[in-house]
Structure formats: structure tokens, C-alpha cells
Length: 178
Image (cartoon, rainbow, N blue to C red; front, side):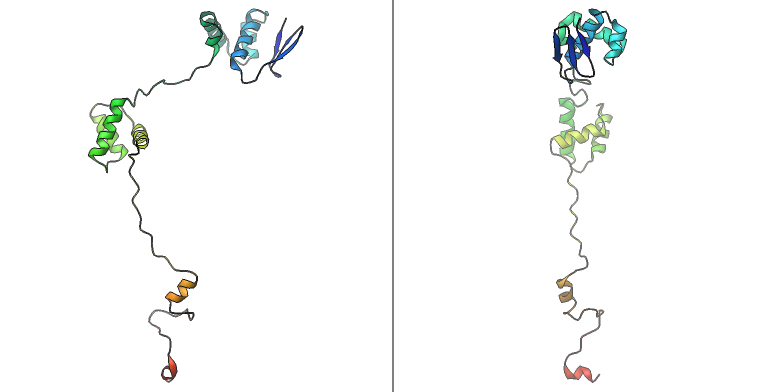
């Protein structure tokens, strides 16, 4: 009888062995069912060996009985479509953005909820981002900071530096007599 070595991902039989890719979940589930049903391991031990519950074992067996090996493929979890951001809700978000370009996502969501739509602030933000309608941040003019380097010396009146406002550099012999 063939046995599956879970650590090495190898199906071992009397005539040799067959390597099974570790990421091949369909083959792992099928081998679990084979060991549980055909090899005499039993459902509980087969499920434990493959890291699943007994309940999940029986779910997989029922699915396999109904639809074959294709039923062992995992499907995408969660919602299959946007049930909150329907086409009409998206149109309403866009409409509110064009009616009031300064309105935030919170304000748009509040207006939609008040009119009977079910939508979150995050969903409004996603719609605005998807359609490129998010508000641009205000442009801050560059601040005039302290100048550094050679430009600072020139702005202060030359290489003398260190003079405070109101102090003037002496010029010529007349300034020496003061």
C-alpha cells in the first residue's frame, strides 16, 4: 500500500516513490482522503496527519463525492463583488465631489448615509482615489530660511560677517577719526 510522507512530500509505494510539490494543496487533500478511506487510517487520524480537523475532512469528502477532485481546489474567500460600493453609490460619491469639491470624504459619506446609502468613509476614500478625485494638499510657499554658505556672506555685506544690523563698515580715512 502507498503511504504519503508529509515531511518529505513524497508518496511512497511498494514500487517506488513519487514527489508531490509542497504547495499542491489539491494533491495533499486527495491523498488525505485516500489514506482515510482506502488505506485504513480513518478520518480522524488522516485529518490529524494533514493538519486538518475531522469536520474539515468530512467537508472535503462530501465535496469530492459531489464534484470530484476539482472540488478540492480552494476558492477565494470573502465577498465576490463590491456589495457596498455599487455602481450607483460610486456615481453618488462622484456627484457629491463635483457638487462640492472642498468636501472631505467624511462629509460625503455623511451626506450619503443621511440620504439612505450604506457606505463607510474608507469606501468613499477608495472611490475618490480610484477616480483621481482626492483633494490636493494645499501648496505651502517655500519659507525664507537662514542662508548658509557663500550667499550668507554676500547678503551680510561681504566677507566681514559678524556685524549686527545697524552697524556699518568704516570706509576710508574719515571713518578712522570718529
